[in-house]
Length: 241
Ligand SMILES: Nc1nc2c(c(=O)[nH]1)N[C@H]1C(S)=C(S)[C@@H](COP(=O)(O)O)O[C@H]1N2
Ligand SMILES: [Mo]
Image 1 (tube, rainbow, N blue to C red):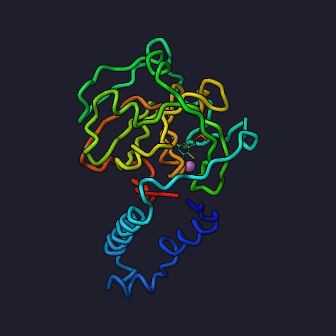
Image 2 (cartoon, protein in one colour):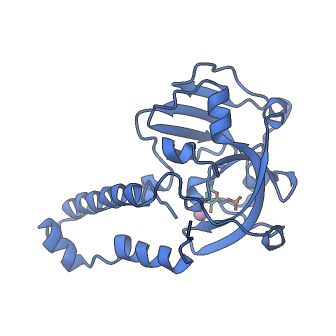
């Protein structure tokens, strides 16, 4: 397949996301920009439209670019709405990953059991909506392998995640089953550092950084679109790259 140059992403996002002026919005939606609720409702409709267009533009099998190991940054940048010293410190002895929703075997998983799953390594670019990106090397288990192992209903529409810091996110099932979507246990060959999400983060290279939840404590399968921490604060839910 041909990989599109990165500029394409930004042009497309500008086209789909940022190019509507208030005047155009008024024309499109017929609402007055001084009417706050109507503007919010109209923006929500444009955002939902964005999600639908993106879902149809990004085939579920489209692969994110991968890079040589030498380009992976060792001291990976940290991000959350709080400082790294406040990142939740999950105890590997007592940690359990809880399973909920449309999953046949809901027995909780220990860190050791997770670590025994088959793992792959990939070098991909993480793109944060705040304006930085970085190439990293993550190792872990394809989420698909895990979902199959626990008897998740793969015909359901979404997989949701809850995190130890109160963060929450969700993926559409095609993205959850995408071959590059990993439960990442290692960063640059080492156990995932606390600030980067120990014991694991979802590494989703076809999505913006905020759709990569860290410190995951619950995975659930559902037909109802899971809410997301940043989507609840105005970002697009789909946020494909
Ligand atoms: N639990 C949790 N996951 C999270 C976040 C967070 O604040 N809490 N921030 C998201 C955002 S916006 C980014 S850019 C990445 C940052 O991951 P990193 O610290 O490993 O670079 O984590 C994502 N996942
Ligand atoms: Mo981010």
